[in-house]
Amino acid sequence: GRASPPLAALSQVLRLERSRRTAVVFPLQKLERYLAPGADTAPFRLFQPGLAALQRAEALFRSDRGHPIDYVSSAVRTDHAPPPALPEVCFIGRSNVGKSSLIRALFSLAPEVEVRVSKTPGHTKKMNFFKVGKYFTLVDMPGYGYRAPQDFAEMVEAYLQERHNLKRTFLLVDGVVGLQKTDHIAVDMLEEFGIPYVMVLTKIDRASRGLLLKNVLEIQEFVKESTQGCFPQLFLVSSVEFSGIHLLRCFVAHVTGNLPTVEAS
Ligand code: GDP
Image (spheres, helix red, strand yellow):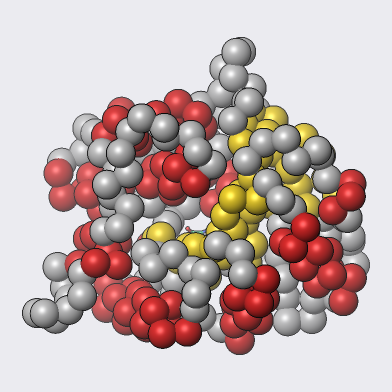
């Protein structure tokens, strides 16, 4: 198998000096200290797991013989999806937002998992299902674009509306450019269906601290004022530097009901 990237395991992160460690594990918290005095800090630390929870989540994402993590199947229609036997999470976002890179980073401790990409224009876009042992499934939804064909929109809509085991939708937003028109279409859809979702800001290594903070505050404000179903805390990730990946693994474990004994905050 392929080698895992340098910070893929918590044991590697724990060797970093304190400030670097916080930046890798809790990238949003790192921004908190640059807020204006009196700013609302609550949305920065709603989900703040301790080491035990992070380790439990990591164990879920690390495959071994008794705990296989596999690509299961692809589907273009919800009725071709695997049986809804396990709690499920799905990842959606514009093409190029960094979705495949993020899913690869999440699964970097299971190097045998192949995250396929079908970007060739004209190719059928599919939902890809991954099974994480007996614990949950993760679905890579096709990237939407501003010319997303109608059948694609219908596939995603049908999935989101019909999938009863879907515990949370992760909507990926580019951390450098913030919410775009197409992202708002996705938000409107999730709001209309009334399903719980969370926003993940990608590629944060490419944004300066000032730009990132501006985007975070704008999106937090939008979430607070204009959404019902969105979790108020944003998740910041870099698949290149591995920041936010451990926390996101932990949140996935949490929403799929796999952190029974460890507290989330
Ligand atoms: P997808 O279309 O959403 O699956 O996007 P990809 O994962 O293929 O990423 C699109 C482009 O962004 C690729 O060139 C990636 O190398 C780049 N990219 C993805 N994630 C990151 C990240 O965290 N940091 C940086 N700097 N680039 C990234």
